[in-house]
Length: 382
Image 1 (tube, rainbow, N blue to C red):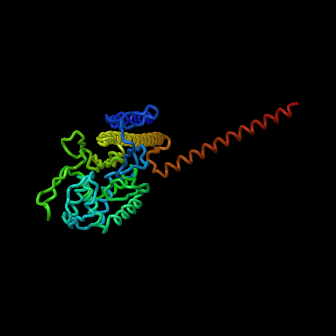
Image 2: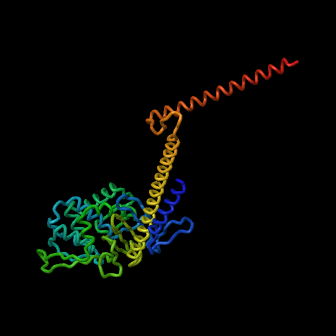
Image 3: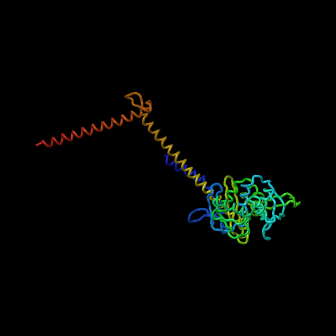
C-alpha cells in the first residue's frame, strides 16, 4: 500500500513540473543527448557565464585569443571606479589624450577642457570616446603606460590570464588580445559596482556645458539592446559594451538579468549587428537551460519528499499492526496487553520468546529420549 502511494505521489509531482522544463523559442534539443542547445549564432567566440557563481553555462571558442576592440573600456571603467573616490573630480584633457587616429570614435573634447570623472565614464561606456579613455588613464595613473600596467595586473588578479592590454581604449596595437572567457570575468567584476550598472543601462546621457564648450553634449548608447524602440532592444539586457575595429570586427559583452538570475554573455569577432542577435539567442538558451535545471532539482526534491512520506506511512502502518496484535484480550488473566506500559510490553514479548524457545527445547528433548528408547528396545528385541 505504501509503495503504491509513493509511486502515485511521485508521478503527480513529475507531471506537475513538466511544463517548467519547456525550452524557449531560441533553443533546440540535441537528439544524441536530449540536452538544450543554443539557436543559430554567427560570432566566432561566444560564452555564457553565471554572474553569481562564475560557472560557464555554454561556450564556443571561449578561450581563443581575439582582439577586444572597445570592450577594453570595461577594464578602464573598472579601474577608475576602484581607484577614484570622488566621481565629481574634474578630468582635464591633454594634447596627448586627444592624439588619437582620425577614424577612432570620440566625443570631440578640446585641449584644456574639463568634465567630471562620472561624465567621462558615460563618455567611454556609452559613446566609446577614445580620447576620454586616455584622459581617464592619465587622471588615475599619471600616464597611459602606467595605467595600462595596472590594467594588466588587475586582469591577472581576476583570472583573465589570456588577456593583455596595450592601451585603455581598445584601438589596434601589437600584443593586445583577450578571450570571451576573460572579458566575461572582467565584466562580472565591473557589475559589482552600482554606478557601472547605472551607466550601461542608460540609453542617452547629456554632458553639461564645460569651461570651453558652451553647448551640452548628447551621448547615445551604442548598445541598441538597451534602447527602447530599437529592433534589438531586449528587456533582460541591463547593459554592456560594444566594440569594433577592422581586426577585431564587432564585439559585445553584456550583463543580463531575469529575476534572481544574472548572466554575462560575450560575443567576439562578428559581422555588423550579429552580436545583438547572437546575444538574444544565447539569452534564450541560457534561461531554457536554467529552467531545465530547476525542473530537475524540483523533481528530485519532490521524489525525495514522496519517498520520505511513503517511508513514514509504512512505519506508521507497522506500528499500528503491532499495536493491534498487542491489544488482543486475554480472558483468563483479565487485563490486556493494551493496558501495559511500553517497558512492560517489551518485557512481555521477550518472555514469550524465551518461553517458546524453552518449550521447543523440551519437546525436542522428549523426542530425542523417545527415539533413544525405541532404538534401545529394537536392539534388545531378540
